[in-house]
Length: 135
Image 1 (spheres, rainbow, N blue to C red):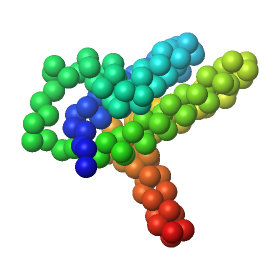
Image 2 (image 1 turned 30 degrees about the vertical axis):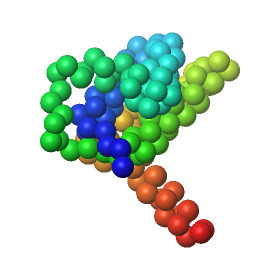
Image 3 (image 1 turned 135 degrees about the horizontal axis):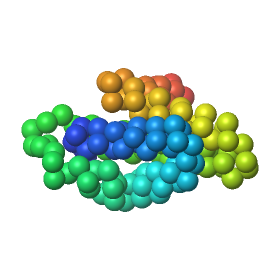
Image 4 (image 1 turned 90 degrees about the vertical axis):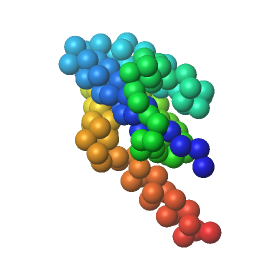
Protein backbone atom coordinates (compact mmCIF):
# COMPACT_ATOMS: atom_id res chain seq x y z
CA UNK A 1 0.00 0.00 0.00
CA UNK A 2 1.34 3.41 -0.95
CA UNK A 3 1.88 5.80 1.94
CA UNK A 4 2.17 9.60 2.13
CA UNK A 5 4.29 11.20 4.86
CA UNK A 6 2.06 12.98 7.39
CA UNK A 7 4.29 16.04 7.13
CA UNK A 8 3.13 16.41 3.51
CA UNK A 9 -0.50 15.89 4.51
CA UNK A 10 -0.19 18.50 7.27
CA UNK A 11 1.45 20.94 4.83
CA UNK A 12 -1.53 20.66 2.52
CA UNK A 13 -3.96 21.06 5.41
CA UNK A 14 -2.12 24.16 6.62
CA UNK A 15 -2.27 25.64 3.11
CA UNK A 16 -6.01 24.97 2.94
CA UNK A 17 -6.55 26.61 6.33
CA UNK A 18 -4.44 29.64 5.40
CA UNK A 19 -6.05 30.22 1.98
CA UNK A 20 -9.59 29.58 3.22
CA UNK A 21 -9.18 31.82 6.24
CA UNK A 22 -7.77 34.69 4.19
CA UNK A 23 -10.49 34.26 1.54
CA UNK A 24 -13.26 34.33 4.15
CA UNK A 25 -11.90 37.10 6.38
CA UNK A 26 -10.94 39.41 3.51
CA UNK A 27 -13.91 38.32 1.36
CA UNK A 28 -11.74 37.29 -1.58
CA UNK A 29 -13.62 34.45 -3.31
CA UNK A 30 -11.12 34.43 -6.18
CA UNK A 31 -8.60 33.09 -3.63
CA UNK A 32 -10.86 30.05 -3.31
CA UNK A 33 -10.50 29.59 -7.07
CA UNK A 34 -6.71 29.58 -6.68
CA UNK A 35 -7.04 27.03 -3.87
CA UNK A 36 -9.31 24.93 -6.09
CA UNK A 37 -6.64 24.86 -8.81
CA UNK A 38 -3.98 23.86 -6.26
CA UNK A 39 -6.11 21.06 -4.83
CA UNK A 40 -7.34 19.77 -8.19
CA UNK A 41 -3.79 19.70 -9.51
CA UNK A 42 -2.78 17.70 -6.45
CA UNK A 43 -5.63 15.20 -6.90
CA UNK A 44 -5.01 14.75 -10.62
CA UNK A 45 -1.25 14.32 -10.16
CA UNK A 46 -1.56 11.87 -7.29
CA UNK A 47 -0.25 14.50 -4.87
CA UNK A 48 2.93 15.24 -6.81
CA UNK A 49 1.63 18.57 -8.14
CA UNK A 50 0.48 20.03 -4.84
CA UNK A 51 2.03 23.49 -4.45
CA UNK A 52 1.78 23.50 -0.64
CA UNK A 53 3.73 20.25 -0.40
CA UNK A 54 6.29 21.41 -2.96
CA UNK A 55 6.92 24.61 -0.99
CA UNK A 56 7.21 22.80 2.35
CA UNK A 57 9.19 19.75 1.14
CA UNK A 58 12.70 21.29 1.53
CA UNK A 59 11.96 22.08 5.17
CA UNK A 60 10.42 18.75 6.15
CA UNK A 61 12.04 15.64 7.50
CA UNK A 62 9.93 12.65 6.52
CA UNK A 63 12.17 9.58 6.83
CA UNK A 64 10.92 7.23 9.51
CA UNK A 65 7.97 9.49 10.37
CA UNK A 66 4.24 8.76 10.44
CA UNK A 67 2.42 8.20 7.17
CA UNK A 68 -1.12 8.07 5.85
CA UNK A 69 -2.49 5.76 3.17
CA UNK A 70 -2.42 7.41 -0.24
CA UNK A 71 -6.02 6.33 -0.92
CA UNK A 72 -7.17 8.17 2.22
CA UNK A 73 -5.20 11.27 1.27
CA UNK A 74 -6.74 11.21 -2.19
CA UNK A 75 -10.23 10.83 -0.68
CA UNK A 76 -9.69 13.79 1.64
CA UNK A 77 -8.27 15.96 -1.14
CA UNK A 78 -11.23 15.02 -3.35
CA UNK A 79 -13.56 16.19 -0.58
CA UNK A 80 -11.68 19.49 -0.48
CA UNK A 81 -12.12 19.87 -4.24
CA UNK A 82 -15.83 19.11 -3.81
CA UNK A 83 -16.28 21.79 -1.13
CA UNK A 84 -14.34 24.30 -3.21
CA UNK A 85 -16.35 23.45 -6.33
CA UNK A 86 -19.58 24.03 -4.40
CA UNK A 87 -18.23 27.33 -3.05
CA UNK A 88 -17.21 28.49 -6.52
CA UNK A 89 -20.57 27.49 -8.00
CA UNK A 90 -22.29 29.59 -5.33
CA UNK A 91 -19.96 32.46 -6.15
CA UNK A 92 -20.75 32.14 -9.86
CA UNK A 93 -24.46 32.19 -9.00
CA UNK A 94 -24.00 35.34 -6.95
CA UNK A 95 -24.77 33.63 -3.63
CA UNK A 96 -21.90 34.85 -1.46
CA UNK A 97 -23.35 33.40 1.73
CA UNK A 98 -23.24 29.93 0.15
CA UNK A 99 -19.71 30.61 -1.05
CA UNK A 100 -18.49 31.33 2.45
CA UNK A 101 -20.55 28.54 4.03
CA UNK A 102 -18.85 25.90 1.86
CA UNK A 103 -15.46 27.57 2.32
CA UNK A 104 -16.11 27.65 6.08
CA UNK A 105 -16.93 23.94 6.14
CA UNK A 106 -13.66 23.22 4.35
CA UNK A 107 -11.80 25.51 6.71
CA UNK A 108 -13.34 23.75 9.71
CA UNK A 109 -12.51 20.28 8.41
CA UNK A 110 -8.91 21.22 7.57
CA UNK A 111 -8.44 22.96 10.92
CA UNK A 112 -9.78 19.94 12.80
CA UNK A 113 -7.46 17.70 10.80
CA UNK A 114 -4.50 19.86 11.82
CA UNK A 115 -5.66 19.49 15.43
CA UNK A 116 -5.75 15.70 15.10
CA UNK A 117 -9.35 14.81 14.17
CA UNK A 118 -9.88 14.00 10.50
CA UNK A 119 -13.51 14.42 9.44
CA UNK A 120 -12.69 13.01 6.00
CA UNK A 121 -11.08 9.94 7.58
CA UNK A 122 -14.26 9.32 9.58
CA UNK A 123 -16.35 9.67 6.42
CA UNK A 124 -14.02 7.31 4.55
CA UNK A 125 -14.27 4.72 7.33
CA UNK A 126 -18.08 4.91 7.36
CA UNK A 127 -18.16 4.63 3.56
CA UNK A 128 -15.99 1.50 3.69
CA UNK A 129 -18.19 0.02 6.44
CA UNK A 130 -21.30 0.64 4.34
CA UNK A 131 -19.72 -0.97 1.28
CA UNK A 132 -18.69 -4.00 3.33
CA UNK A 133 -22.26 -4.46 4.63
CA UNK A 134 -23.73 -4.20 1.14
CA UNK A 135 -21.45 -6.87 -0.30
